[in-house]
Length: 404
Image 1 (spheres, rainbow, N blue to C red):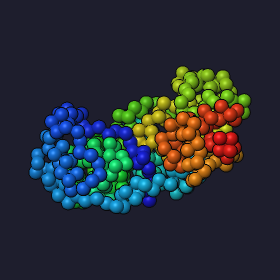
Image 2: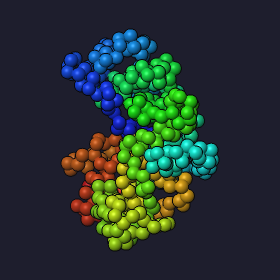
Image 3: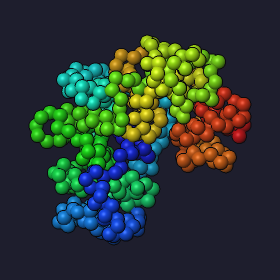
Image 4: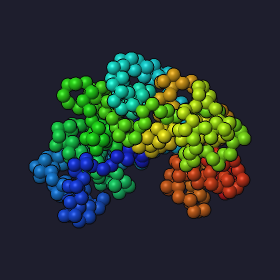
C-alpha cells in the first residue's frame, strides 16, 4: 500500500548542478517548455527535444522513450489522497504497530554498523531513518510495481503538477545514461520514487551512495545503499547533527494558544518560562528555537518541534505524515507512547471542504478546498479562531464551522 502523498513530493526538483547550466541554455535555445497535456506523442517529442538540447545524445533519449506510455493507474493514485484527511491520532495508530516497532529494532541491530556510519558521517540518528524506511516500504518489503519512466512521464504530462515531475523525468534520463535505471524494467512507487527509502531520480543522482562496498548504487536490492543514501539526502536537506527533532511536552492550560503552531518560534528557555515541560526527559538546549505543535488542538497530543522537524517537510509536505514519522522515530529511540488527551472532534470530508471554502471566502489562502488539514489551513483556522474569540489552537471543530 502506498502511504506517502506526493502532493507532497520532496521538493528537490532541480536537476544536477552540472546539468543546470545546460538546462538554462536549452530553455534559451528552444523557447518555453512544451505545455502539459494534449497529444501524448507530440508532448514526448517536445521533452525529447529539450533533453537533447540539454546535451543528451539523441540515441540515448530515443532509447529512453522507446517504450514510454501513459498509465491511468498513476493518475488515479495521484488523485486518491484521502488517507491524509485522517487526524494525527488515527493516522499514527494506523501506521505504527508493535510489529513495525519490533522489525525496526531488529533492523537497527542487523545494520548496526551501517547506522553507526550514517550517524558519524551525516549526523542522522538511526531512529529517523528507520521510521522513513518503515513507512515508505515496510523495511524494503513493498517497493511498488509501477514502471518508473511511465509514472514520471504520466505525471509530467498531466496538468495538475507538471512543474514537479518534468524535472524528475529529465533527471531520469541522466540516471539512465549513468546506468542506474532501465526504462523497461525499473519499477517503484506511483510517483516515480525508487528503492527502499523511495528516492526520486534527482535525489538518487545527487545523493545515491554505495553503502555496502560492492561498487554500485542499488537502492532497491541493498538496504545499506538505501540507508546511507537516505542519510546523505537528509543531511543535504539541512539535518542538524546532535539536535532533537520532535519532543512530547506538557502544555499548561494557561497558554496563549495563538502562540502555538509552526509559524511561531521561541527559544526553548522562553517556552519553559511559559510553563512548557517535557513529558519524559528534559527539553532541548535552552537556546534552540522551537515551536509548540498541537496536531489536534489544545486538548490533544502536544509536541515541541525543533529545527530538524522542518527538514521532514522536504521529504514529504503532509503535516500528519511528518508528525507521525518524527514521532515514530522517537518511539524507535525509546520514547513512550504519546498521551492522546481528549481532543474535541475535528472536521473531515465534506465538513473540512466547507470550512476551507468559508476560509477562502474570508480571504485566506488555504491552498485549495481539498479536505486536507495542511499548514496553510491551520494558519487560517487559527487566525479566525482568534478573531472570533475561540481558543486559537489551529484545530478546526464544528464550533468554528458554525461560527463562520
